[in-house]
Length: 171
Image (cartoon, rainbow, N blue to C red; front, top):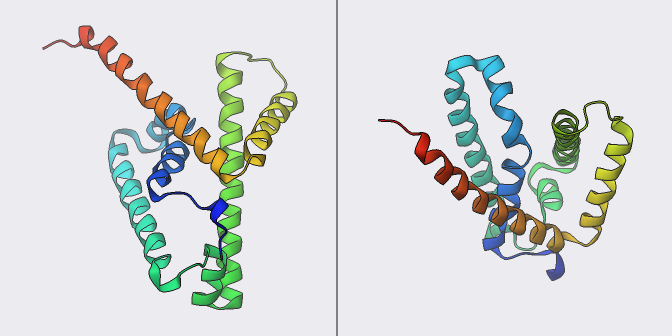
């Protein structure tokens, strides 16, 4: 059973999803995608978007009203048994740990390339880890709040960028 203080409204689910997809990776994905896929990169973007939607649909379907009050860990034990459930839960945990390290690497790469090219990685990664700990120690709802503000600021910054590029458009 999940406590009420760890639950959020379904409307707020959009914010952590948006921030996790449009975080620092939006700055670096184009070059990595073009290096490997070339001009057929649009196919991988469509396939990735479709597969993410399919996975999210399956997650919401599994967590539907048939299994009220179960979180993902106990739901995997119920649906897949103890051994297979533990394997799936371990894979989920490893996925999120790998994603966190990848985000940390991307943020360090951005700071090194744009601001301080000769800076040592260790102090920078410790500072970022301390900031992340401060945000996460406030609880899940504070992470959702930070995600909502990040979504708002990133969407607000898109409109001036579009307006500034309008004079450069030629027929």
